[in-house]
Image (cartoon, rainbow, N blue to C red):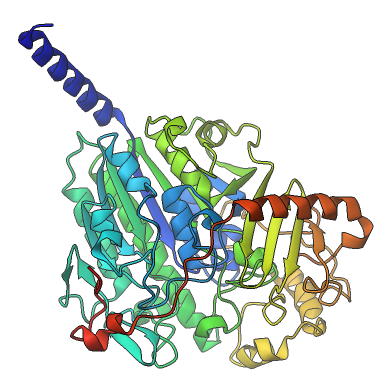
Length: 540
């Protein structure tokens, strides 16, 4: 082969790459932090209207049986890597403050894969996958730009982050530089402004990947800060909610809803929308009933964030895209958060078979055509520090070990000021079912809908008097038939010993493949007090 032929071949290959890249869809992944099942009107909330999210959900694919991890870091790691947290060491809790670990560097993540297909990759918002060394931060993991913060929570206005009272500092970045210009600006607003700027300045001849994990609606700093923060213009939209905390929380959700609408409008104005795939997801169930000082709600699902009950792991989410073959339907198929990497990579024109050691499935054709479910089960989690775990296999869900009893109830949304006390977790223990039964009967009579579409509601059926006492997973595994009992009222383990045995055997198999949790103690060298008052990578 002559030198001229080689040059022509290289040029032709490059031109083919450019043509293919130009035809690939833009991918926008929007993550809401701690959004509860009952916090959006497309799930039938009769308190909080979310018109922008509703329109996208109803005209896209609304996900009914979609599951995430029960807490932040594990979900984000699975979303980015396509691997279950038990295979990345992120299965226990979250990265707290200056704990020196993160999503392992030998794991390729979504922006790195998409860059191979010619995508421009940008991130706006929360990371929470490690920052003790700079190599763990977004710019070194496939993102061209990052505007946001590294830790799990913080103040929405001054952008300080409190890991503990002794570990407190500033956490806001533009790329690899601490950004103090954002002080005093509400995070939802400035993240949206940044996202719109990226869209407006994007070259439409190249495909765009925008990862937009909002701070909303996570609690602010605890214990010393203000956990619920929203501009008054949003809080004033909800005079019908008399409970002050729930009304403020509703304002936070409404600000997020407006933000998503603004981002979609920007895609349309730049001519990018018609060739875009938009994924919206929460990272876990809502911290209901005062958990983390929050006022989220998962009713009628059982449990809260950080638990393995449905309220902790059933995710609020949808896919919206003009390029879907079928749109405007509710997906009954089973989906797990680790499926998004191979699914979106396939939507982008990539071949997921190139990806090794994935736990996720490519569901693009299934979602685009409303085809038969590919998944038949999923591991919710195994936490060896419990020990505890949960597994879905077919229609059955099994829980075992030290599953939270304190936060294992059914918590109605706060409406009047006294609800914060009446329904508070310390008065709604595992033996108090009377208030729950009363609320179920009242809510079924007085429900209202904000949308012209039909919201996705959960039908729990009658509440048995022993719903909160018939399961003690620490003593022996509990079993639920989720399609007929989505609210986990009826423990049927005693009636199905063969199913329990089979599912515990599957748990044992997963356990044999698990890597140890990476969690470790906070490193004093990473304390902001030792780094000019800021959270920064402190190790070389």
